[in-house]
Image (cartoon, rainbow, N blue to C red; front, side, top):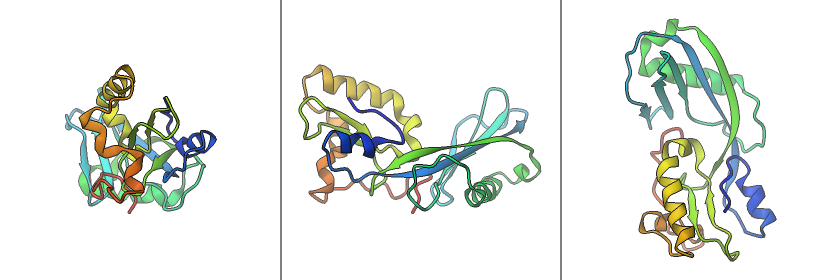
Length: 184
């Protein structure tokens, strides 16, 4: 089972699998705590930004990625400024918020911004890769369906069939261009 974040293309290459995945830097930030004002996670596909409030009151926001593929987890001022502007557009009072910390990592993206899940050309090598900027939001159902796949000996669950690796060679890509934080 390959279920790595940020290095999927490298792992697939080592397994001898041709990968459509590219790796991009990704950043997120957190503000000072506020009284509760936001229960759900709010995302904007137009701004490529998500905002959520933690149980401690901090406001976490992120989305988008630097526009060039890199295996670098350093933060960049360009993306930080862009994320701040988008979060403020969603919630104007954040213009006066203190930014407490920010971090960067790397994320894997497929050309259609959807994950690759299921069988690979290598026997007993299952793929769960290319989640881009929204993998943590789908982790519970992803784990369940991948466990079903392995436990069934390779019978692909209906839910993940559209995410097969073969879709890139058969032009059956998933339309996720509106995915929050997709860099397009």
